[in-house]
Length: 127
Image (cartoon, rainbow, N blue to C red; front, side, top):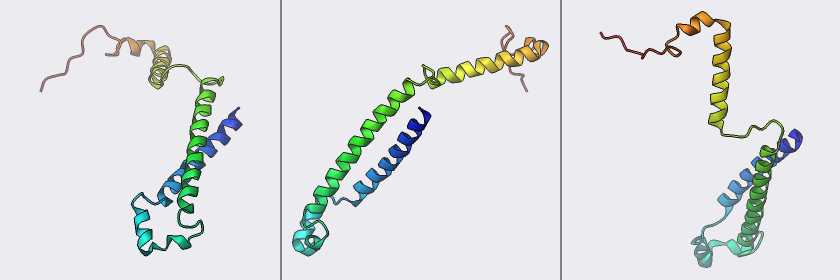
């Protein structure tokens, strides 16, 4: 399952880069008026309007793949054995609790005198 996820993430990144390149290559809506005044677009590889049609269809296909892969990756992340349900903050809090328990079990006397575990309010010394 990890191999599938790695392959999908690699494809995901490649498609994202391809979408960026395809969007940057495309002409804006106002660029077609320049071609009518001798812009020279009619001599291009795809013809006068063929490149815009080809690039827009390719971009739409890449965006569709990007969307499908993102849905599939989210499905895989939820249904893997190693995934923990909950938020990232909950995972951090649980790891902090585990490290606090581990530290208190190593030196119980020090944890009793700690200001974090004491019932007295913490005061800042004055100058």
